[in-house]
Length: 158
Image (cartoon, rainbow, N blue to C red; front, side, top):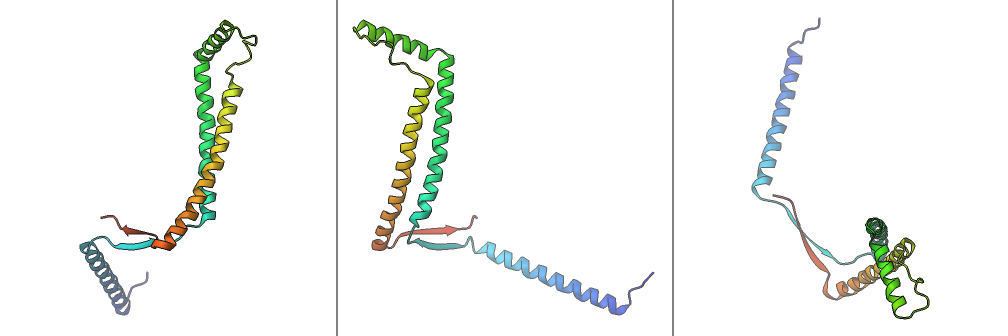
């Protein structure tokens, strides 16, 4: 078994003293930071990159497109299971045939028609949302050049 001599004990005492001193310094730094409150920083948003806005808005609108298609499909299946569309189709057939129409059964509400219409509207929405967001970034950049941008104040939590 090995014994620690007086030199080893002295080195351990010096190491313990340094650790204790570092802990006291860290505690005083944390206490002084906590007493002065949260830090604040003021920033100006001078420019927004239109390319990044276009990519982000395209991704968001694509996700919303998928959500709309799924929601339309689920809603159509639920209403079809309740017999709503069969009732509406028979009412339309009766209405058109009573009006003297010859092609009374040409218009029917079907899954293909409902989901296809939803997909068409969603595709137009993807293009318009992406284009308008990108145009908005260009307009913001022009206005920010004139007035200096938007000032933000960032702060840490209390």
